[in-house]
Image (cartoon, rainbow over all chains, first blue to last red; front, side, top):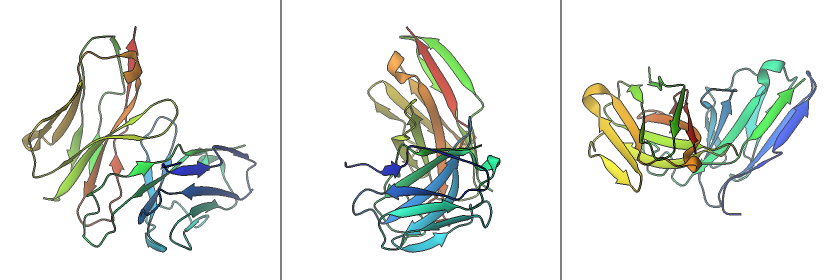
Length: 120
Length: 115
């Protein structure tokens, strides 16, 4: 498809398990963002990639969260030793432009449908 | 610090009514961008509009219109003649200069349009 694709759509895991969430951005999009959306809240930034480089990971809540984008296209968000507070929708977004300019906003971010993660 | 506040948690209207969703933002940046996104029950965030801090002209797109006022740090969104399909959660968001383009979202306003 032409949009941002995320998988799985739903993920249920037991506390303590590791999970991996996948994001396939729009082809050619340089920038890729991960957000976490708790129930009834707005999305909150987790991390940002420009191609394969992770330029901002200030939003990752703990060292259990790890993201990668090794070839500058598909990205994976991994959560180790999951906790109940990790339950949320994880949204991926991509946009066309890079951060060559200090403000990366010439193009809007296009979001996927998200992965709903439930930790039991 | 940058912050977006959407004071209205939920709004319920009857079809064909006009409705305004409020958004107030805080930033020390002189250059910034404001956005509105729609999140239907399916979960995907749908881009509606982008406005930069140097352009205070109001914008109209069909039944949608946006009122940007820097003096009050507000970027309000009005839907005219609302329809049931407008029912969704609406988010206002901000990108400030000096960051990597991450969106700072408000809490969202849930709009329910009843037939």
